[in-house]
Image 1 (cartoon, one colour):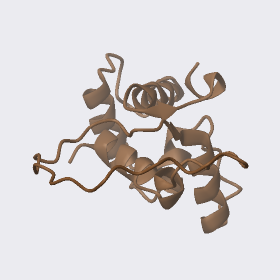
Image 2: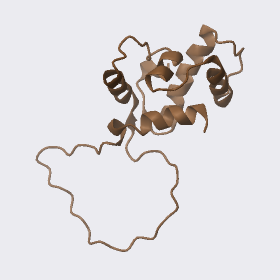
Image 3: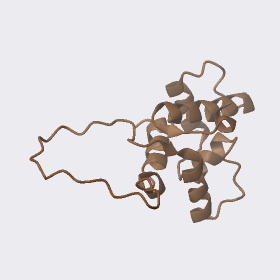
Image 4: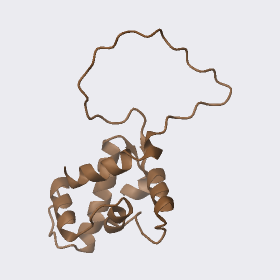
Amino acid sequence: MSIFGKIKDAIFGHPKAQAAPAQAPGQPAPAQAPAMPQIQQPAAQAAPAQPVDVESVLMVFETERGTADLNWRTSIVDLMKLIGLDSSLDNRKELATELGYTGATDGSAEMNLWLHKAVMRELEKNGGKVPAGLKD
């Protein structure tokens, strides 16, 4: 699995991301149609039905793991550590290749900043809700 795929799976697969949207108070529950036989479709990897609030999920990771000292909002290294991935230079080089980085893959600040923003933009393209401050 790709490094980006692992990042996406860690965030989109978190229980916070899977929670059903809350129903507004005072609204009646939607009527359910009678059960009808369903034709089994092959499982497809698609974007989630509801956008995943990426920032909220990452804040839950931060709380669960007691990692308030990580600067995951701007650092790809800290983001990867937060979600439990290996943040080694080799993995960041692989991620840079996956996402189309064309500069030197030497672990420079330039590369790492680019990677963080690219990951956030890709998460958004794949069904995530990402605040502008995390992707710009």
